[in-house]
Image (cartoon, rainbow, N blue to C red; front, top):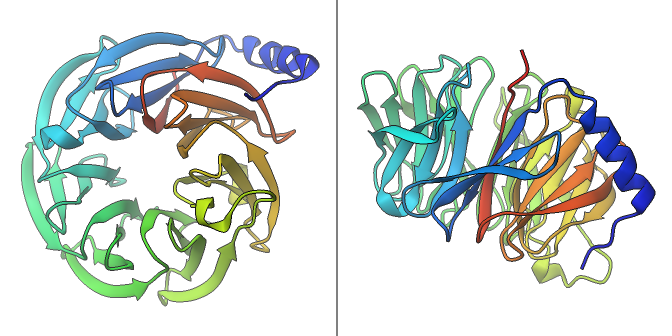
Length: 325
């Protein structure tokens, strides 16, 4: 059990309670086929909505009027109205969609199809598949550059990051990473691209222009066997100065200096941490902890866990929905 300091808890509640409007963190629950909605003001679950089978990836449209959910075992991307929780329609996604990314044009979804070794590109307005791109075995991670010119798919079994030209919808490079890559992100205005490798226990940093490796980040949690230190999801602080990395069954989040690539800190969270999302001003970080069925709230400034919020069974994905005007 994680115990939280009373003074810290009071301070954080005071901080978030000062907001005029409560933003929301949306969390997918794999085993319950639901999403939990957490208020960033009260730090409590305020709504739970039904989804298709085994929801994992979750992302909002640019204006936050729609939420897209990868219902993996339903072989569909569901489009939900976040105001009501009603499923508006389903998009053709290919088999077993797991993660996806929305192009900056707010229209094209790039979807990793784990069972088919393809990336499916769907037009969210016409609800039509506009491309299917052959990638490596068991694709999972997805990213798109800020300028929208490059999409990335990571393949868990092939141990590669696949670089896609979004104009031609074709691969133009394949780069090796360590075993079982799970998550990818472009950072520093697209200058770098980071990929986490779950079994390899590393993050590989690439130069986006040359697709060459710049650095490799390794992790070591005191008292935890190296086999349990498994980086999966990660998010960046304001200005991309630091990366917060979920380390899976080690039950810790690492804090990495994004300039030096050095690990500065480890934060104890719930069991089997998967993914995470910041609140609007990035003062709080919410982690999904699959085995313990909860979300840990981290105060970013102090790098301390301040609260645990019970959600559904096996929470997986997380996304911010700002509701402030």
